Image (cartoon, rainbow over all chains, first blue to last red):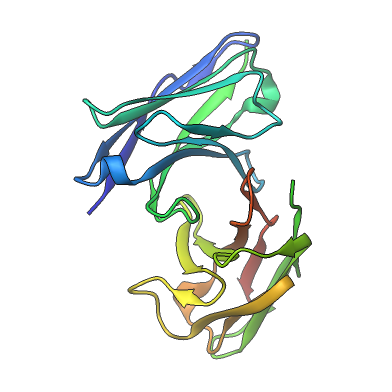
Length: 117
Length: 109
């Protein structure tokens, strides 16, 4: 059973960088595509980007200039850094796994990040 | 980006009812993987129900089914059960960025 756990601060100041890490428990870390997806309060789902164990990544163009996703295969974890945040970045952030790159089979429980001064 | 539009936004139904949710893509989805459907209960992460348009994720009840092609896709719940009251999202897997519909909330009538 694949388990994912997000960690990071729940409150970030405007204009600062939002940083989250996802630790994954699985033997198939290197054969799965890892993504970040967020959900603003009361709203729908937004895919932010993904990364593979090789470091190959894809980003949502709407966030590409502010977003970096990195991976550490030695620790079975991947991370998100989103710069210059505003209140519009307030959301529940999920770390997610897609064994086939197309669909999201594995989800963390989600972590609420609030951007506020 | 491929925009995904779901209808209706919400539906009120009773246990035992047949429910159909529609998802329309802004451009044709042409790869073999196509589209997936997720169920989200309040306060929980989404759960993949159907992938590649019509393939059921293992463990998902057979009352759930998916169909469609091109730009129009449907999720059908053949006989609504109490645990099915939730919000459902479609997601296209044709291209990056991956995009989701805005959701359809299935409520108790």
